[in-house]
Image: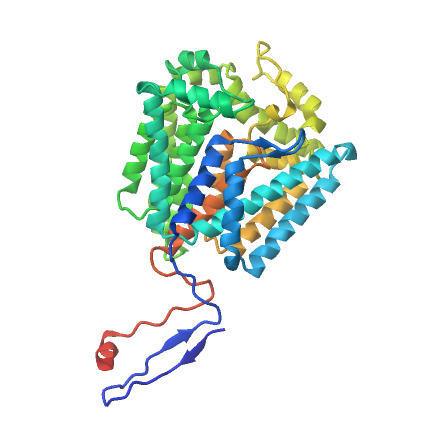
Length: 468
């Protein structure tokens, strides 16, 4: 609770007391990050970009190892910023995931589900550390870091396509990735009329996903008046350097930004702004549809004719599986990382779908059947536990003072159409980074105070003169 002190200055003109609010809790100020913090954030982003995984044992991986190392160091450096309420919600979320896992059918898959819970806890932990670090940064500082990282990706892709970097990139990729290396260059030539750059990543989709995420985070955090113009320019630059439909999600991401953040004034919803940004959002969606038809006609033709396996396994298939699992296993779903439990069911569902082609090879292992972390939430948890965890995670965001929970969930769901691995670091890095971006957007460059505290009141001009 705040206390009010009224010290007076000596002198005949001191007609008004000098008010000072002394908060029971200290104010959270934007002190910024030092060079080590910035280096660790970059290492975390490199781990997300490369998805470099160390296999600790035959069944225990260390996914995105650079991100894990950086996240644990960041957690230690931010240990003084961990407060009781958010920590309690973190422990409750993990406990709820554990309970949902024990509630799932067929206990013979318990070992695999336990492994999934360990990976999920690891991902939530380092994601939480990243949130604490990013929210301590200045907007200009962390926004510049994200933008520079995105531009490095663009320059690397251009060098790979036009500067002779491809042999070096391919050699490094073969050396550091034991499996999952994208080698379907012929398909790229047919669909995009050229080979898509990989720039040291395992596959082109990782390049476009990270580029889209970083550009979007910069756009949300930046205070520049013309940032939307540059954002559209970054979309065009990305489509030229690394063609792929994932980049069109950057236009769809304007929808949650406009509706949930830009429509606010001083932290509250402004109806006039809401109508304006609604029109801009509709324009962005229209641009998405037009660009999809103009830039990727062959890919769009394959999607509409049911001849695009990538789109099926990333968007259509997971949606069908999610609805089916919620219908038949509504309480606890398949359990964390429970793809083997439902592999036969999902495979039959895919094969019987009119959108599935008989010419496609049946995907193996089972984890490749569902590449969409949004739908995996419902596949793993079912309807009941899915809603319980949705509420618990939302309350955790509220405890972290994220101003717009809807912004986080909508952005997370949109980017989930281009990424899988629900228990992996990428899924939860998106969750916490969008939450941190919303927090920085609401805060501005001025010192931020914890919710419930008051700033020192400003004096009217006349009383200010009397004080001097």
